[in-house]
Image 1 (cartoon, one colour):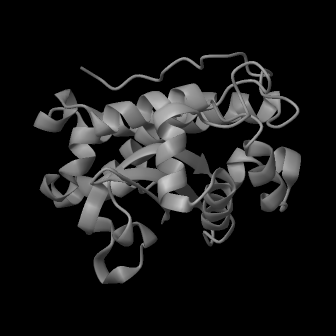
Image 2 (tube, helix red, strand yellow; image 1 turned 45 degrees about the horizontal axis):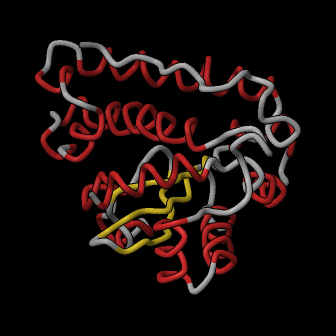
Length: 219
């Protein structure tokens, strides 16, 4: 079955003023849609076409050499964005605030406090050179923060960390929250002010969804 573009769980303008409607229209309808189309084209007729995206990416080393780069870039983009959209919600209507329950306790255990986590995650996002992502992951029951280049993500494992070029080598695990720091995610509104975009992100994090992701990753 071909990969499909998921619907956004909110209107294009729902995240304003933190992320503008035009950015959301382009980001979802052009960029994410393009990753889906190119993933389907790359894997058409292969056994990987009927696998879940996460399973394909965990087996990236088994993808034929002539398709691997296209799959890494495009199916990586599809997986990353499919995680990203539900982890956002309108400010004050599910977005923002702070986590609670088991997720909050895990954050305190790993980062000493919620503010400590925010600082580590924001630093990972701000210091990712060029395009990429910052991640909160679960590995061996422990929360970790890291970043990856381009559309890579921690579930790809050692294949993207050859030579130690990727900070997720020390992180790994299952992503439960990601922040897209490609310029297309913020440039229309923030131009080169990535730190302002990162600061705005905290107003629209859907902690209920992140908690569900955490429960799934640790269950």
